[in-house]
Amino acid sequence: MKAFRFFPVLISIILISCNQNKPLTPDLGKVADPDVWSVFNREVNVEDDVVHLDARPGSGLVKLNDLILGDGTVELDIKGKDLQGQSFVGLAFHGLNDSTYDAVYFRPFNFKNTERNTHSVQYIAHPKYPWHVLREKHPGKYENKLVDVPDPDSWFHVKIVIADHKVKAYVDGSETPSLDVSLISHRHEGWLGFWVGHGSEGWFKNLEISPVAGGGAH
Image 1 (cartoon, rainbow, N blue to C red):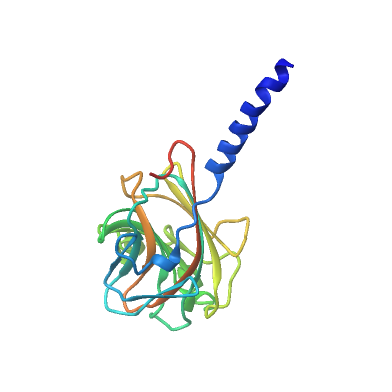
Image 2: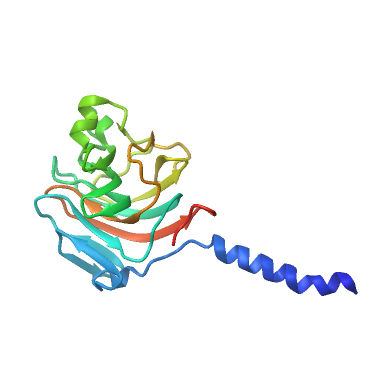
């Protein structure tokens, strides 16, 4: 009989553990609600849970207001365009304000360009380390080609893993990261959000956030 007395406790522990491991799925339908999300230097539109940021000069962001992420895994679907120099789309994280953040972004117009495909995915740490500074000082270190190359005009799935002050980016279910670099910034947590570069528009959907236990979200 004593064994059965502990059974409900074990069930409770299992249920709590499962709930803690469940990914967070922010409501993208509320992206236009300033109490939930903040938008910087873009106009944002949402249709059928697809978030669209328009094209304007400078970088643009839409970030979650009440989530601070340390280590964790972020998955989402992204779509840009196959237009040379006009499509920079990705995820910003460990953000402090609208100009201080890390990001991993993609250049779809380089995906299938055999002369420039090594510039397909990029890590940056604004404001001190934009792409051109990293390319000049550390050529080939913070950008790479994709392991699995999607159609540059279509949706592609991205998994960003942030752990041990490193970031890895996986595309379309590949088990091999297309990008694997150490973070340059000294921040270990911050806000996250969708990011687009100068003159770029982008589309985003299916955002899931899985914080790491002990270094997760609050």
